[in-house]
Structure formats: C-alpha cells, structure tokens
Length: 294
Image 1: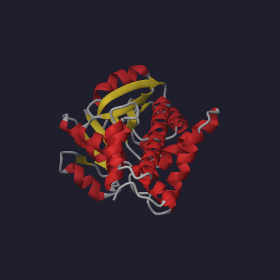
Image 2 (image 1 turned 180 degrees about the vertical axis):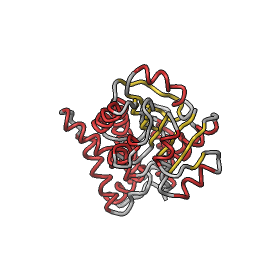
Image 3 (image 1 turned 90 degrees about the vertical axis):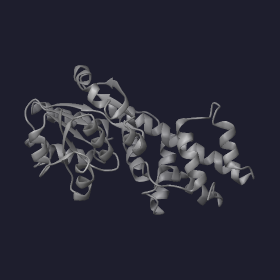
Image 4 (image 1 turned 90 degrees about the horizontal axis):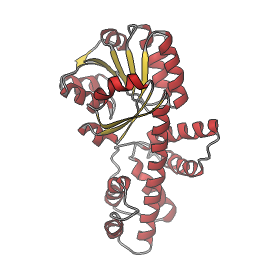
C-alpha cells in the first residue's frame, strides 16, 4: 500500500518502520530533517513536503502532538486537503480532542476524503514492537477496510463508534493511566516513609488485585529513579486538558483527573515536563521529602 506518513516523533518513527517492514511504500516528510533520515535509512521514502507526499498516496496517516497541529496540517492554507486526491483516506492517529476530530472529518468530507480517528496507547516500546492498542472512530465499513493496515502497527485495533469515539476512548485510557500512576507513586511513597522496601511491596502485591500493566511498567522506573520518557509528562498534560475540556462539555465529573493534572502541572513548572509520566514519583518526593528510589 502507498502511504503518506506525517509526524516522525517518538511514536511516528517506529510506526513507519513497522509499515515498511510489512511491504508498504511509505512516503515521509517532517520539519526535522534528522527525523526523516532516521526512517529513510530503514526503507521509507523522502518527500519534498507534506503536499508532495499526500498528492502521491491514497492513504494518509498523521501522528502529531495535539489538535492545533492536526488542524494546521489538514486544514491550513497549505494543508493536505488542498493537495490530497478525492477519494483519499486520512487516518489520524494523533491523540486530540474528540470535537476536533469531528470538525476535521466534516472538512474532509467536503473534499471527498474519508477519515478515521485512531489514537494509540502503549508508548514507544509498543510502537517499536508493533503491539500498540489502537482505538478507532469513524464509519464501520472504513474501519473494516483498514483494520489489517492498523494491525501492522498494533496488537489490537478496536472499533469504538463514530468519528471522535477513538479519541474519547483514548481520553478514558489516559485518565485511568494517570490516576493509576499517581496511586502507585502515593502507595510506594507510603511504603518508603514507613520504612518498608518499595521493591518488596511491589513483589508482594503485583500478582494480586492491585497488579496492573501500569504497575509493572512504572514501579521499576520509580525505584530505579529512571524517568527516561516513554510518554512525557507534557503530553499527558495535553491529554488530560482534552479530557477535562470534554468532561466539561458533556457534564462528566473528573475530580481525580483534575487533581492529577495539578500534580503534572507542578512537575512541568519544576522543569520535569520532558520526563516520563512515572516522574509523578518526584511530586511525592517533593511533598514528602522522601524518594521512592535512587
């Protein structure tokens, strides 16, 4: 399949590599030339601009930071809608506000372009090994048509409903992950301040009801003091902003989300916005005076 891929960040680069491995002809462009070089050496093809690659390809995938970037790339004066061919398909895999997905889809439809919103969960490690969880919104028939393509990047690609449902599902995911990490940091800080080894607490409880994928991924990072980003705090702030905005629109209470968002904002103000979101441990270290790990 001939694919234009826009957005070669932490997630985009390994996603491109997996598409190439499956035999697709993947055309790329990015404002950072080093990002282009990192994927063209693995078989992707370099385009001269976003306009160039979308005019070449019937399928366009975007993987961008937030709603404004997707809106600029798709709807802007030199956006892809000005150059994509009638009948093209846009699969936006960015994590953005559901309302933004719906507005972008309306603009695409006016140009004869179909769209799926298909945000992902799993971070860089699962992007690398092609086991991302993909949450899809849009026409069911379009999902059915492109599910096999999505599974070249993910371990699952679940249909969630009409356009915007993918991003609503992703927001629910991000709320659960954020609150889970905060609870984990809080519990491990309790163990440490009480004189109990957090590593032993982790070993004792990980197989019980408290155990989770989040715990298995983030507890070791907290205890090692390793906050190399798999998913940055600043990106989680963006997702929780979208969740709080969506909750306000539909009257859904999100008090726990709002509290964790304030923790993230404190860490951002302290200069840790580029750390992994497991650095919520640093928030608890700040308020308790005790580090969980090193």
